[in-house]
Length: 437
Image (tube, rainbow, N blue to C red; front, side):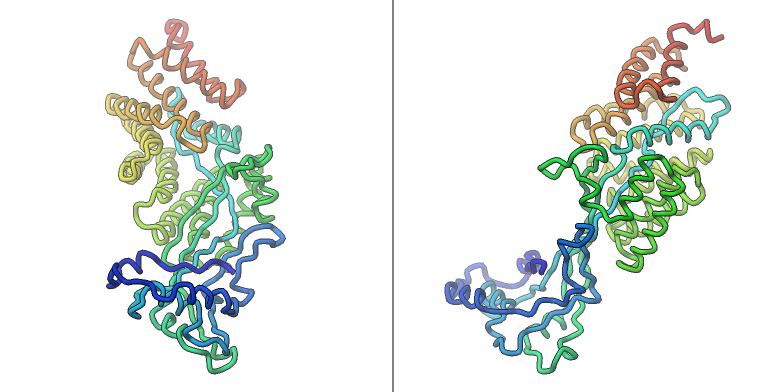
């Protein structure tokens, strides 16, 4: 049975004097230790030893409470808690309950735009390079998530818990809890290593449901069409299990957008990212950083469609969100993307200003992220963008910046990578400009 806790914020907001003394504490605790309460039915409990070893969410439809017929009202634990905290009998507290959803994968999208010397602004080459980078370091782009829920009973339900049930199960109450908040919890996942003892790295075979293990395998072998099919089934299943307006389903929409992006289904990807934004905002609020994860991908898709004004609007909205929460790494990535948009719009000076600002933010955030390699890769892409812009403007330090980015890119992506190859080409252009004419 999950722990039931008193909402301390509501307790503190009630009109109770801080000078109250708690009478009969020892006797009251003895009552608690000898009082029996019927547990919620099995449908609403969390199973910690299920076949997929994942925690199952207690749904609000099945969450019911009842008192034992032979337990006097004054001996019920909830009544005892009220007596302990509010001897005068006045309480504004609700019975809260926190539960967790099942584990699921969370996928990062492309996040960062890279400028390279494509003829005719070839969007297909942009996308192919981004897909190659994504698949090269899969473990830097995925983690395991759970959604935690905080419930509260309504006023009527709380009052009904103070009375004995006079009938059998049919009158034990249809007490339903409403969700106060939903919060996303993330832990990195590495597919090819042993899980760490401190829980900072998870083994997919132990912590993921079968459908998500199947998805992890499809992503590992870059079978992106299959990944889309698996995720469509996951979304439909989660809708039935949690309801349409749940944060788990909002994350499913985002993940479907990422898999469609990898499978080159760009219209579907745009639709799913837009749905993810709508449902994330409904669950988390208008400006939660998790919302910006999906907004960024919408901006990148608009950029790749040459809709620069639309992309710029989205990226500036994301930048505002990241600035509000002082998230340097997100600010850096977004400034880089804004700079890339300005470059494609023909404003090179504004582009260089934004991308140099991005570099400062990303340097400051290095070493602070749980996904160190992902942060390092995004930093190297930004560094190569600065070098590329300086190369086009004739700056003398372009070569040094491109070479610094190349060292990092090779350490993360290896030598056999198209992005690495294009940075090498830019270095050769900087060193031997006459050979390129």
